[in-house]
Amino acid sequence: MPGYTVESRRENPLPTNILDQYTLSPFTKAFLSRARLPSFKYVAPGVTHFTLDFFYAVYSSELRDSPRLPPHEDPDLNEVATLIPPAECSIPYPAGPDSADSEGFARFTVARRAGLYTTPDAYCADGVKLVDSVGSSREILRYRPPHCPWGPNRYPRLADILQKWAELVQNKVWVVDHDGVKTSIDWFLENDVTLEWSL
Image 1 (tube, rainbow, N blue to C red):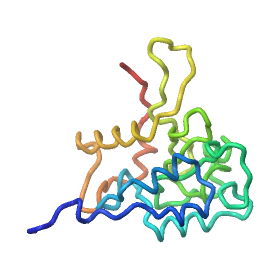
Image 2 (cartoon, rainbow, N blue to C red):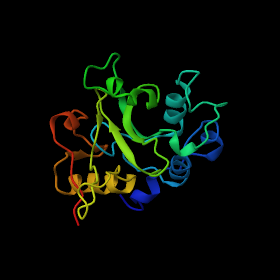
Image 3 (cartoon, one colour):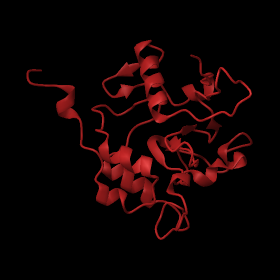
């Protein structure tokens, strides 16, 4: 249509006065307050993005003792796991033997919402971990230095994951329509998405 551009449909980032109502890691707050929202709904299978109303609804449904709700004194805000791109589904309870519940990651989830979380690791503030539709805390793009295979692993950075997701779209691994990625979130359950770092 004349005069239409994708950029013209993109929404503004989330306002800082809303984000300031919650205890978020500095990286999460910076990302959500600066990243322009896409013009489509799904950025990955079953994974969407926060609109202002959706963000408020999800974070406001947290339990009162959540580390993300003030007043909560945390010596290092980078150690607060936060949901960046959420999934539309919530994790059932109990989630099962291989779930985030048994792995201990469930205590970091926001209102038992699936999605991509920053890791509670002060040394890798932009590291992320996927919690899928059944609560599995999946290691995607787990990095191990190739020159030192016995060295410590690190979580992938958000930018790494978004780049890999873009490749899956470009390579037509994921089905796309006007709402974005049409493939179901169950894709993460049915496919091996653990990749090693290589130079």
